[in-house]
Image (cartoon, rainbow, N blue to C red; front, top):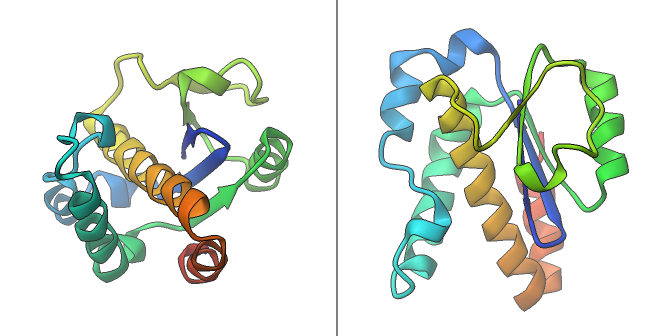
Length: 146
Protein backbone atom coordinates (compact mmCIF):
# COMPACT_ATOMS: atom_id res chain seq x y z
CA UNK A 1 0.00 0.00 0.00
CA UNK A 2 1.26 3.50 -0.82
CA UNK A 3 0.07 6.75 0.75
CA UNK A 4 0.84 10.17 -0.71
CA UNK A 5 -0.27 13.66 0.29
CA UNK A 6 -0.51 16.78 -1.82
CA UNK A 7 -1.71 19.84 0.12
CA UNK A 8 -4.94 18.57 1.71
CA UNK A 9 -5.57 15.58 -0.56
CA UNK A 10 -4.36 12.17 0.64
CA UNK A 11 -4.31 9.23 -1.78
CA UNK A 12 -4.16 5.61 -0.65
CA UNK A 13 -3.33 3.05 -3.34
CA UNK A 14 -2.89 -0.67 -2.81
CA UNK A 15 -2.41 -3.88 -4.76
CA UNK A 16 -1.41 -7.48 -4.18
CA UNK A 17 2.36 -8.03 -4.12
CA UNK A 18 2.35 -10.62 -6.93
CA UNK A 19 0.55 -8.14 -9.18
CA UNK A 20 3.05 -5.38 -8.37
CA UNK A 21 5.92 -7.71 -9.27
CA UNK A 22 4.39 -8.76 -12.59
CA UNK A 23 6.04 -7.85 -15.87
CA UNK A 24 2.84 -6.34 -17.28
CA UNK A 25 2.46 -3.95 -14.35
CA UNK A 26 6.09 -2.79 -14.50
CA UNK A 27 5.83 -2.28 -18.27
CA UNK A 28 2.76 -0.08 -17.81
CA UNK A 29 4.44 1.95 -15.04
CA UNK A 30 7.79 2.34 -16.78
CA UNK A 31 6.93 5.72 -18.28
CA UNK A 32 5.49 7.24 -15.09
CA UNK A 33 7.30 10.20 -13.55
CA UNK A 34 7.14 12.15 -10.32
CA UNK A 35 4.83 15.09 -10.94
CA UNK A 36 7.32 17.62 -9.58
CA UNK A 37 9.93 16.41 -12.09
CA UNK A 38 7.69 17.13 -15.09
CA UNK A 39 8.44 20.47 -16.75
CA UNK A 40 6.04 23.28 -15.89
CA UNK A 41 4.93 23.65 -19.51
CA UNK A 42 4.00 19.94 -19.69
CA UNK A 43 2.31 19.34 -16.32
CA UNK A 44 -1.27 19.74 -17.53
CA UNK A 45 -0.73 17.46 -20.53
CA UNK A 46 1.10 14.90 -18.37
CA UNK A 47 -1.81 14.68 -15.91
CA UNK A 48 -4.29 14.20 -18.75
CA UNK A 49 -2.25 11.39 -20.28
CA UNK A 50 -1.67 9.82 -16.86
CA UNK A 51 -5.41 9.76 -16.14
CA UNK A 52 -6.12 8.21 -19.54
CA UNK A 53 -3.52 5.49 -18.86
CA UNK A 54 -4.84 5.03 -15.32
CA UNK A 55 -8.47 4.59 -16.41
CA UNK A 56 -7.60 2.27 -19.32
CA UNK A 57 -4.94 0.04 -17.80
CA UNK A 58 -3.59 0.72 -14.32
CA UNK A 59 -6.91 0.77 -12.51
CA UNK A 60 -7.46 -2.93 -13.13
CA UNK A 61 -4.25 -3.86 -11.31
CA UNK A 62 -5.11 -1.99 -8.10
CA UNK A 63 -7.28 -3.38 -5.32
CA UNK A 64 -7.57 -0.20 -3.23
CA UNK A 65 -7.84 3.40 -4.42
CA UNK A 66 -9.08 6.03 -1.97
CA UNK A 67 -8.88 9.80 -2.05
CA UNK A 68 -9.23 11.16 1.48
CA UNK A 69 -8.97 14.51 3.20
CA UNK A 70 -7.91 13.61 6.77
CA UNK A 71 -5.22 11.49 8.39
CA UNK A 72 -7.80 10.02 10.77
CA UNK A 73 -9.66 8.56 7.78
CA UNK A 74 -6.39 7.08 6.52
CA UNK A 75 -5.66 5.48 9.90
CA UNK A 76 -9.16 3.99 9.96
CA UNK A 77 -8.73 2.59 6.43
CA UNK A 78 -5.36 1.07 7.36
CA UNK A 79 -6.93 -0.53 10.41
CA UNK A 80 -9.73 -2.04 8.27
CA UNK A 81 -7.53 -3.31 5.44
CA UNK A 82 -4.53 -4.32 7.57
CA UNK A 83 -1.87 -4.32 4.80
CA UNK A 84 1.45 -6.15 5.24
CA UNK A 85 3.50 -2.99 4.60
CA UNK A 86 2.79 0.64 3.77
CA UNK A 87 5.02 3.17 2.02
CA UNK A 88 4.23 6.62 3.37
CA UNK A 89 4.94 10.19 2.32
CA UNK A 90 7.53 11.68 4.68
CA UNK A 91 5.14 14.50 5.67
CA UNK A 92 2.71 12.14 7.41
CA UNK A 93 5.01 9.26 8.35
CA UNK A 94 4.91 9.95 12.09
CA UNK A 95 1.14 10.42 12.21
CA UNK A 96 0.11 7.07 10.71
CA UNK A 97 -0.36 4.01 12.91
CA UNK A 98 1.00 0.83 11.38
CA UNK A 99 3.70 -1.57 12.63
CA UNK A 100 5.46 -1.94 9.25
CA UNK A 101 5.86 1.34 7.39
CA UNK A 102 8.55 2.66 5.08
CA UNK A 103 9.34 6.30 4.38
CA UNK A 104 8.90 7.46 0.81
CA UNK A 105 12.51 8.72 0.81
CA UNK A 106 13.98 5.39 2.01
CA UNK A 107 15.37 2.77 -0.38
CA UNK A 108 12.72 0.23 -1.40
CA UNK A 109 12.03 -2.28 -4.19
CA UNK A 110 11.14 -0.84 -7.62
CA UNK A 111 7.63 -2.27 -7.57
CA UNK A 112 6.86 -0.16 -4.48
CA UNK A 113 8.14 2.91 -6.30
CA UNK A 114 5.61 2.27 -9.06
CA UNK A 115 2.80 2.24 -6.52
CA UNK A 116 4.11 5.51 -5.06
CA UNK A 117 4.23 7.11 -8.51
CA UNK A 118 0.58 6.23 -9.08
CA UNK A 119 -0.37 7.68 -5.68
CA UNK A 120 1.72 10.81 -6.31
CA UNK A 121 0.14 11.48 -9.69
CA UNK A 122 -3.39 10.85 -8.41
CA UNK A 123 -2.78 13.17 -5.44
CA UNK A 124 -1.59 15.97 -7.71
CA UNK A 125 -4.45 15.43 -10.15
CA UNK A 126 -7.07 15.65 -7.39
CA UNK A 127 -5.33 18.58 -5.69
CA UNK A 128 -5.52 20.57 -8.93
CA UNK A 129 -9.10 19.46 -9.54
CA UNK A 130 -10.16 20.45 -6.02
CA UNK A 131 -8.73 23.96 -6.50
CA UNK A 132 -10.16 24.49 -9.97
CA UNK A 133 -13.51 22.70 -10.12
CA UNK A 134 -15.26 21.25 -7.06
CA UNK A 135 -18.08 19.57 -8.97
CA UNK A 136 -15.61 17.81 -11.29
CA UNK A 137 -13.67 16.71 -8.19
CA UNK A 138 -16.78 15.06 -6.72
CA UNK A 139 -17.65 13.36 -10.03
CA UNK A 140 -14.10 12.05 -10.52
CA UNK A 141 -14.06 10.69 -6.95
CA UNK A 142 -17.05 8.48 -7.72
CA UNK A 143 -15.39 7.18 -10.85
CA UNK A 144 -11.88 6.58 -9.46
CA UNK A 145 -12.36 5.04 -6.03
CA UNK A 146 -12.44 1.29 -5.48
